[in-house]
Image (cartoon, rainbow, N blue to C red; front, side, top):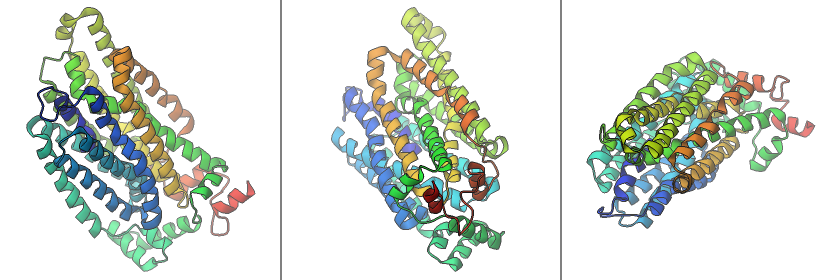
Length: 449
């Protein structure tokens, strides 16, 4: 996933160079960037269907197939049209990831380290960005595709070997299989206790389709959980993530950075992102989700103010300013990447995997991922037209204004889920006990409302 996002920064800079063998216009380049998120919208639908039919683990296998197809198209691309299809297919894989991956991790991880596991797995995103930036520095478009086809094949083989989710097996009535899966994922520790917890969690819910889920939105605690999840995925996208990731090298070029090559600056920023993501694995379950989000949102807002200030001064003071104070734009992008990777990247998916009962998980993941995809498409497609219309400075100032609102949102709306079991989180959201036991399913709660 990280490679698909980070790939655009070096290769869009190449593709928009007139002497490139596969030259594209800036308008076509903006579509190459944005179609990743058009595919992501479709991927959320496919992810919902796959997760409902086969469970989160099997859905992850199909996710990797779409990613593999996307890179294969990049390998053989000879026109912008082929790249459009490649990006759309890759986007479908990303849409599916945000539907099924948080559910999968939420179902297999210990409550005490669930946040750290979420964050550790999301270290792959900045690592993928880094690898994509390095390949952009050294390799051609087609050779880069070969580099990313290999891990897709390896991950498909890995997921075919992994046991199914214990939650899925309990739903199927395969208690022996669920016990074996719990023993494998937890290295034999607390198997019977965890099996009992999974059974209680599953039995407190009822099977439901998407229409049932829409009816359940009348229940206040379910509606609140969906609202929180959608807002977190929205904040992830309106932070300026796509503007920075997709156009980072171009931003350095337009910012008149000469202290080091823009392509090298992108690589160094990506290294900082990996280090920040690794650091967040310890912070997630020590500081909690709320503290990380507040710190991350504040840092991203500061970074956007720094970038906006740089381009404002560049417009008024010209190249002399750029040469003397180019450290401002470099520091701004460093602060953005580090701040984003510490909180806004891992926390939304972690919270999504924690907030919902078993009978609403898939549908809630679909709604959250769909909302994220729509905002991601809007932010990535509108970046270039907005830059052409109002300039880089105002685009970054707008991002700063939008993302700082995450602070009051977290303080007022987001419960702390650190170290709590999925059942305990349901009790926090619904202190009146809407999810109690087998005799009081959430469907009955809906009927009462």
